[in-house]
Amino acid sequence: MAAHSHAGHMPSSGKALVISAWLTGIYFVIEFAVGLWTGSIAVLSDAFHTLSAVGGVLVAIVAQRIAARPADAQRSFGWYRAEVIGALVNGGFLLGMALLVIWMGVMRLGSPIHLPTGPMLWVAFGGLVTEVISLSLMWKSSREDLNARGALWHIIQTFVGSLLIIVTALVIQFTGFLQIDPILGAAFGVVLLWASIGVIREAVHILMEGTPEDTDLDAVIDDLRSQDGILDVHHVHAWTLTSGKHAFSAHLRHADPADAARILEKAYSRLTRNHGFHMVTLQLETDCLDERHAEDLEFLGKATTLDSDKKAISANPDTHHNAAPKTDEAET
Image (tube, rainbow, N blue to C red; front, side, top):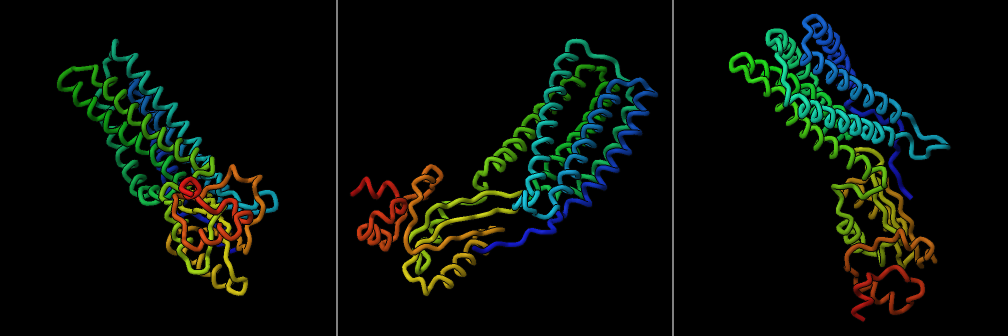
C-alpha cells in the first residue's frame, strides 16, 4: 500500500476568498444604504443579491478552513469533503436565488415600475469595480477548486447584476421601456439556474464516490494490465477526495512473489505520474481471494484481457472468478 500524505492541505484560493468577502461585504453596506436613501427597489434588490454573494463566499471560506484540518481516528480521510459539502450548499443557495430571480422577473413583467436611473448607475459602477477585483483574484483557483467555483458564481451573479442595472437604467433613461428590468432579470435567472445545477451535479457526483470526471478508468486498467509481471487487475476503485485530489485502489495479481516490490513501485509510479492520482492503495496477490461478497462493487473495465490472463483462467478458473471480462466467457 502506498499513499501521499494529505496533512496540512491549504488551498491557494483561501486568500482570494477572504479578500473577495471583504470587498463584497463593504459594497453591500454601501449599496444597501443607497437603496434605503433613494427608495429604489432595483438597488435594494441588487443589494440583497450582493448579500447572497457574501454568504456564498463565507460558506466557501468556512468549508475551506474545515477541510484544512488533519486526519484523525474518527475521520481517516481527513476533512477534505467539507469543501464539497460547502460547494453543495452554495449550489443550493444559487438554485434558490435563480428561481427567485426568475419568479420576480415574471411577476414584475406585467406591472413594471419606474426606477430612478441616476443612483442606479452610480451604485452599479461602484459594484463593477469591486466585482472585477474579486473575479480576477478567484478566477484561476476556481478552475480546479469546486468550492471556490461555487463562490465564484455568486460573485459573477453580482457582477452581471451590476451590468443589468446599467443596461436597465440606460434603456429606461433613453426609451422609457420599463419592461427591460424584469426581462433581463429573468434571463439572468436562467443562467444562474444552469450554473447552480452544474455545481450541484458535480458535488453530488463526488459525494457518491463517482469516478473523477477527467479519469478514463478503462485506460487506467489497461495500462496496469499491460505492465510486465501483472496477470490481472480487479477490485478497481477511483474516487475524488476533494477537487483536484483523486484516489485509486485495486488488487493486482502477479506470479512471482520475489518480484512484488518492483511490480508495486512501477504500478504506483504509473498511477501517480501518468494518471495523476493523489493517493494510491494497491494489494498484491498471487491468488485471488474469495471476495464474492463484494462482487456488486466489482468493475473490470472493457473487454481487454492479456494472453497471460487467459492462460491463468484456463489453468485455475476457481482462483480467478473475477478476472475475465464477461465478453470472453460469452465467446467461449
